[in-house]
Length: 273
Image (cartoon, rainbow, N blue to C red; front, side, top):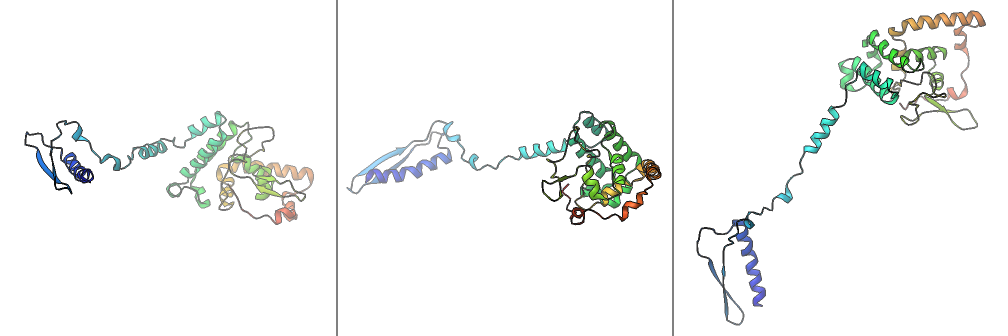
C-alpha cells in the first residue's frame, strides 16, 4: 500500500519538474514525507535533474499542423504547363502527338475567342466571329501539313458540304460516331477520349481531327466551318459541286428532299465530346 501511495505521489511531481526544467542554481532539494497505514513514515528527497539535455524535450511537435509546401508545389507545377501557341501546336503535330495537339487546338480557340471565353473556359458559338481568319487558317494549315491533308477544319468543311450539312451524316463520315453490332443499323457516339483515333492509320477516317465539343449543340462547329477563313474553300466546294451536278445531271439541292434513314430520324443529339 505504501508503494502504491508513493507512486501516485511521485508521478505528478516528476512531470512538474520536467515541465519546469528543474533547478540548476544550487538551491537545496525539497524534502517530502509520506505516511503509511502502519503509522511509520517514509522520507525522501527530490533532487533536480542536472542534465540540461534531458529537460529540453518538447511535446508540442506531435500536434503541429501539416506543412502546406507540397500543395504550393503542386499549384506551381500546374502553372508551369506550356501556354497554347501555334509553335507548340506545330511541335506536337510534327511529333505525331495528335492527342495533345487536339487539346492545344481547343485551348487556342478559347484564347482567340476573347477574354470572356478565357474566363469561362469554353467558347460560345457567337464568339467564333472574334477569331481572326488569319489565326484560324494558321491552325488549319498546321493540321493539314502534318497529316498529309487528312485532318483540319477545311477538310471537315468539305466533308460537311458533301454530307449536305447534315451533322449526323457528317459525324458518321468522320468517325465521330461508330456503327453498333446490331441487326438494325444503329450508330452511337464514341466515348471521349479513349474511343477516338489519335494516330493516322489506314482506317482512320478523313477529317477525324481536330475535335470540336458539341455538348452544347452543333452551332459552335457550324460557325467554325462557315468562318470567313474558309471562304476560298467554300467557293472551291461550290465549283466542284456545280461540276459534279453538270456531269450527273443531279443538283446538290436534290438531296434535301430525300428522306433520312430511320436511324437518323430517331437519333437524339446527345454529343459526348
